Length: 211
Image 1: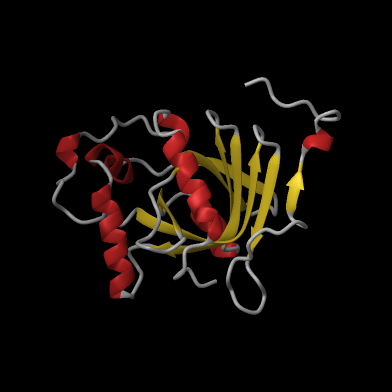
Image 2 (image 1 turned 45 degrees about the vertical axis):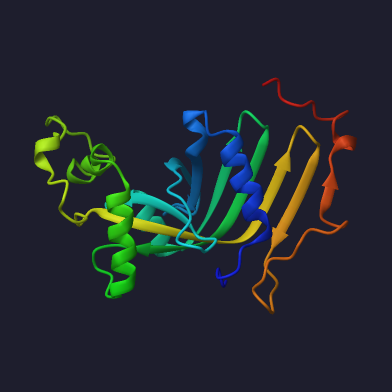
C-alpha cells in the first residue's frame, strides 16, 4: 500500500505511545510471522519509530535470526502491541520489507545506515555477537569490539512493516475500531458505524482483565 499519507490510526498509536512513555516496556511489542512448518512464530521486538513521514513501522533485527527466513518465505507479519497504562491494544497486519547489506538500492541502504546510527552502541553490539538462537560459550562482545563511527555490520537488517489492517481495542472505553485499506485506492478507510464495535454487551460474558 502507499504510505505517503498519514493513516487515521497513526495518531491513535502516537497518543498511546505518548501516554505510556514513562513505562520502559511501552516500546516493546510482539511480532508474529509464519514459521517454516506453517505455524505461528512470535517474538518481542522494539519499536524504532516510523520511517520518515510514512506509516511504515521500523524494526531492527539480526539478518541471521529465524524471523528473516520466515519473512523470505512469507513477507507478511502481524504486530500485537498492548499498552498497560491505558488498556489499549493494537493489532497491526501488513507486509514487511527487509533491507540488509545485500540491498542494491542506495536510498534503502541510507535508510538502513540511519537506523543503525539511531541505535545506541550497546544495541549495536548484539550484531557482532554469536548467531541468535545458538548457544555460545564465548564472552559477549565488548564496546572495544565495535567502532562507534563505523557503518552497519553485515548482520544488521532493517525491517519496515507497511500496515494494511489495524485493529484497535480500548478496554477502558469499551471501543474497538477496525482500519483497513481499500482494494481499489490503497487508502485506509475511516471506521464507520459498521466497524466501530461497542464491547459493552461482551462484558457480561467476558470479564475485563484485572490489571
